[in-house]
Length: 354
Image (cartoon, rainbow, N blue to C red; front, side, top):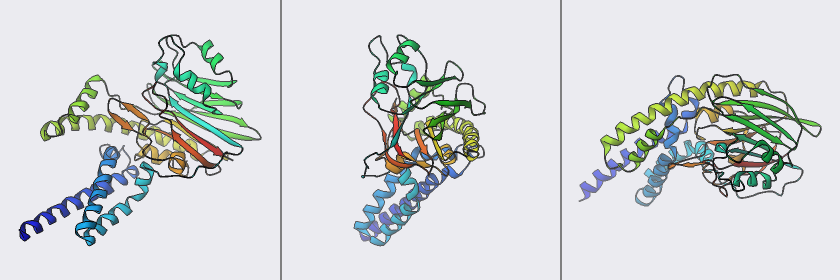
């Protein structure tokens, strides 16, 4: 029995080491360009599962063999920056003074509207945000420009930018919008816009983004559902998993070019106050998030709590909507707001202090 127990422990240790190496590969995958290694760039999608696995082994070994438990803790420590990005823990929330509230929301074209008062419009009206950035902004059904203007009358300044395929980006602001200019990169349906807002005596540069989606159609979502229901069938999971991974990899490669273009715009910015937000279609552990957020504060990491799931459709649960602020701002609070389910995204907002 002692021999069997010893063999089992060594097998578990090998599994622990393999899992931990995979965990570290995921944690540092954002540093690898999807243009060169598109498949590796998708490792961030499984990061939470590997992180939980390493944590489980750390607790398990601390009970059985402390020395091996310390090994797992060492792996966890090496990947801790990524853990904090994915699952920030912040308890303190300061009382805002002379603050600005920024809200970003992929509204999916007001698709929830059925002739009744729009839940999305009501939410935006009552949000008390100073600046609202919207993605997938499209008029539909009873949602007319006149109705939007009436409901959002507290926002006298607005800019709607048409992208492609009927897609639009919108900015509604209490501050005057001085200019709006698209970021130059190739995309059929997606895009980014740089706004310059007059914020008192200062200028706020705001970048609203809707990066390349993974373009999963009905068939792809069915494949994903079959994977979840066939976890005990290794061959089927492997086959369908490789197919979905190839789609994610292609989209990640396109987003890499877009992220580089946005990062270049940010690097050339001379304004002290800068905010970058939108639907990145990528997790916090990704090249797009890392590249665009370089030198900026991820407001959710700084003042949010938990995984902050912002996409919630077809059993895909990820934080793919992000909000960054320049170091000149102090982040007081940030939240992915689950109080409204009208879109397939939840809104993300933050309160900043100059």
